[in-house]
Image 1 (cartoon, rainbow, N blue to C red):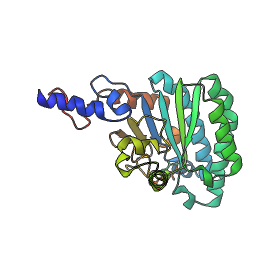
Image 2 (image 1 turned 120 degrees about the vertical axis):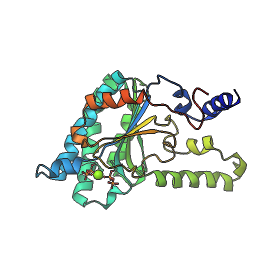
Image 3 (image 1 turned 30 degrees about the vertical axis):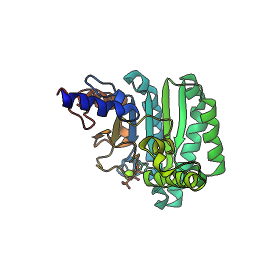
Length: 259
Ligand code: IPE
Ligand code: IPE
Ligand code: MG
């Protein structure tokens, strides 16, 4: 009795969607994807890496289209990390051009499909033209919510936490906040994902089983799925299979289910 009651308290006091998803027969609301393997997909065929990135962008369109039918309300994809600047100038510029083209070409369709588009990551290092496109599509789709689609560009989990910590420290230094007011919820509110629930499920393609600095704070209680499939080969069918497996998982959030 005591343990069951405590378990419930633990679940109901946790922040974001993790509490809403506790219990059995759950649905996945927020899926986050580390879209990896574009380079290998192209190299395996003897093609330049950018061909793989272009194919990867086509896959993003398909996954966005099928997500609402799978019950997904929030979809967040990792497109470019704070570490990806280490790649060749050609690859980095090629990726930036793909992002710009994606926004320009998909804006009408996203609006027609009632998809709200957001971006997370540090935009200040991006080309001002790209920043303008990002802000434009965010504003244009802000009225929709059939699917909340977020792309992480120049995103790094540690970088995000550093930026949030600086903001909070500034507020403390200015006397607007006392150190005792710093809480789990307050930190969440200072992250790029302030408007997003925590991911329920993180999928990484390409067989790598690491998280590569993707949403470290937000995924504290996320479930993970790793697939060997390279991102350009990832299909709505495979996403459907992964989502249905998620329904059978028991999420405890530190409590005891069925006690
Ligand atoms: C993921 O594919 C896309 C980005 C990181 C931009 P990769 O480009 O990392 O592909 P692999 O891992 O080299 O195959
Ligand atoms: C993670 O993939 C970043 C994105 C998918 C955007 P990487 O290919 O950059 O990750 P590592 O280098 O294999 O960890
Ligand atoms: Mg990779």
